[in-house]
Image 1 (spheres, helix red, strand yellow):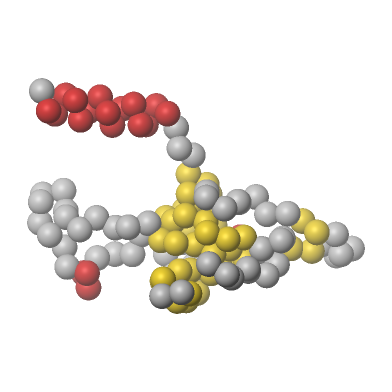
Image 2: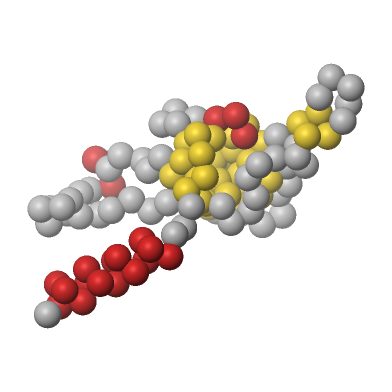
Length: 113
């Protein structure tokens, strides 16, 4: 992608939503809710304070984040649907813990047994 956001803006790719409900019902595209989490694709250099000093952003490329339902502006860049929003619209960074990965693996082994 050859797009660089300005100031404190961030480019985000939405996470894929589930196509099946917990009960196994397939959900059509027009009935799905848009996910409120995504991956940071590109970040701007940061905002400037009153004295003109650059304040770097807390998020970086590759972070998995949580954002508000109506946050950002939807754009299409290189044929891909993306969101552009200010860092202030981001609620937090989702940490990838090793414990969560282990728990899923153990649960899958128990289910298979």
